Length: 87
Image (cartoon, rainbow, N blue to C red; front, side, top):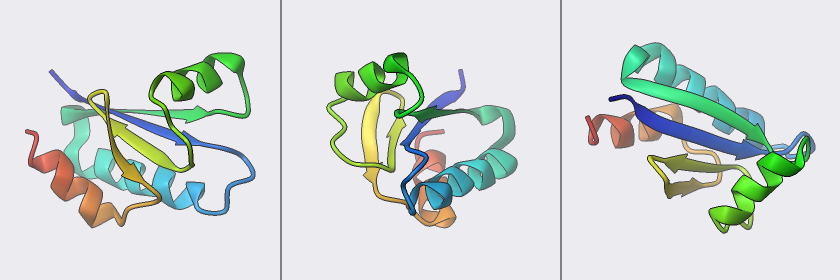
């Protein structure tokens, strides 16, 4: 089963694109071993509620398999290393 990677961001956040890019680099490297979803919490109440459910207080935040793992944008290598440790 693929590792679930959820990236929480907003449209106004200057650091969120780096987190999204790191997730995309990880997806490019690890392929079907991970599923990446981007949640823009300022675009829908559903996305906002999902962030509330995880008790996310800042963006960007990356949740891996239901566990908040990174608050802030990790380097792609850091994210990949964390994901590979879960494979």
